Length: 64
Image (cartoon, rainbow, N blue to C red; front, top):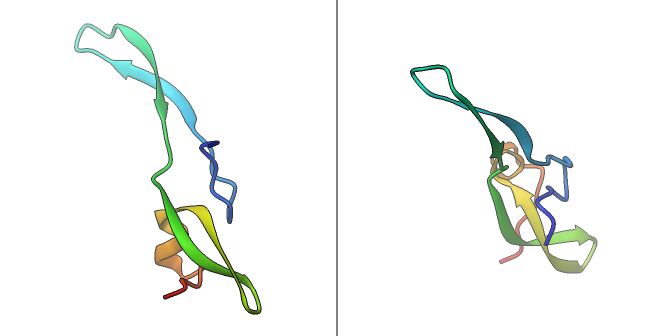
């Protein structure tokens, strides 16, 4: 399973962990992805991986 939102295409970003001594270690910022049963188009339900910001924004119509 790829770490990508099916709606907005959000993917992991890279950055640094920064210590008090300013030592830098690479890290990953993963999007908060959830599996949701959603309507893809009229009468067609499928499980898709969606980020929580898309769910909150109402870009996904959940199937009961």
